[in-house]
Amino acid sequence: MSILVGEGGGFFSNLLEARVFVRFTPPKPMPLSWAQAAVRRFEQFVAFGTRWPCTATEEVARPIRVGNDRDDVDVPVHRRRFGVTGNDSRPLPLFWPARRPHSLAVLVEHWFAAFPRFAPVFDLMTSLTYAEPRFADAQFLILTQAAESLHRRMMPGLYVQPSEYDAIRTAVVKSIPETVSDSHRQSLRSRIQFGNEYSFRQRLRELVNGVADDRLRALIASDPAKFIGDVVDTRNYLVHYPEPPTDGGGSHIGPRAGGVAIFGLAERLRALITYHILVSILQFPVDEAARAVRTNQELCTGMQYYRSKA
Image 1 (cartoon, rainbow, N blue to C red):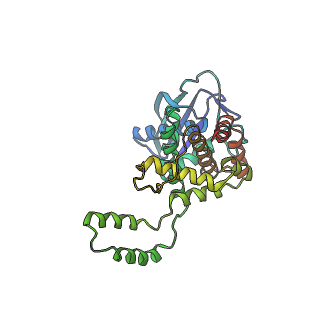
Image 2: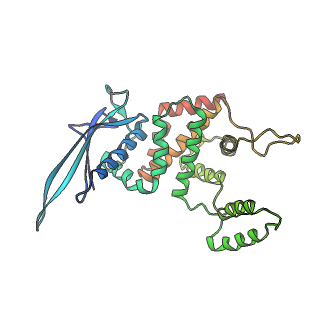
Image 3: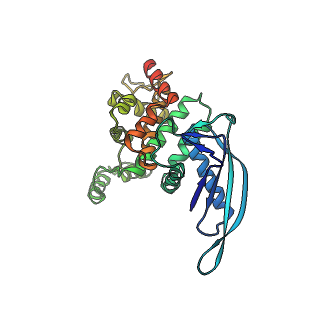
């Protein structure tokens, strides 16, 4: 697939005009659904890069003739014009004030190439752009899902080799008492089946440790253990919602972040995920990816303000 972006300088520097066109040319004739899927992927690319909702406003589909040594082939070319919701008058920063290592077309190609594997991550991240920002708990949970999904697709995430875990799983299953009911036994077996996969805490720890830029890592998690613990405890509280203990003992789930603190956790998670997408998917050099995140005023203001209030 070839990708052509811009219209008379529609893309310039790091700014994206409110209305540009993108032309996607498949290598062979494809149905209209192919073009529709391409449009959706590009909408997500723009929404991720600008943090503004992006919707297609016009579609044009036409065939062109492509010649070769043997015969001419009809290849449909689909063109879509994009508008950025609520911001049609001024250019938008795309991936923030950083020197892009590639042309915009190359970045789009990287995004499309990664889509089959990372589509769930892209869906979760761009859904935040279209959501109401005042629902802090929902945004936080979406970002925890995105972080776990991203790690699963980037890193192995196993404690031991699968062949080694087979013996562990067999031994643990055999140790389940006979008095356990069938439904409870099935539940335990299901949990043991996935017992070799990293916990969310370990996945988050690897994502934080994977930030190669010291300044950005300190901005996201100046105290990594506390940051990771706050994220995990708050996620567990919101997902499992433990009832207050009746025996006088403490809950097994740590205290949740509340008030403005949860916004701070959400913004730091967003920065963490964005950095890894820029480096691992869009192939930014580490220093350029870190600068892109550190110099994003909206993101950094959120992180620093809410951290100071936590």
